[in-house]
Image 1 (cartoon, rainbow, N blue to C red):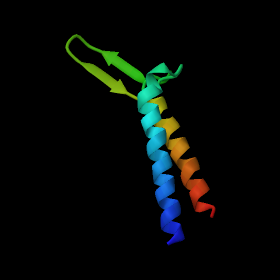
Image 2 (tube, rainbow, N blue to C red; image 1 turned 90 degrees about the vertical axis):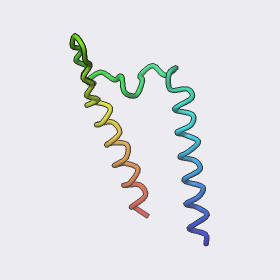
Image 3 (tube, rainbow, N blue to C red; image 1 turned 180 degrees about the horizontal axis):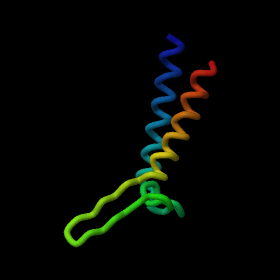
Length: 72
């Protein structure tokens, strides 16, 4: 039962962090999805967007988070 309580607290903290990121993310100096290394190709009638650096950054953060969780 104690493990369930800790898991619920962790999920709550993650939801609060995600809410803060969505609310105040536009005010950050580096916007997620608009990092250097994200490719945007604008054509005459189309736009191709490839968020390479954003994907790498999210992958590193999630890998670190899962590593921390798996250490226990």
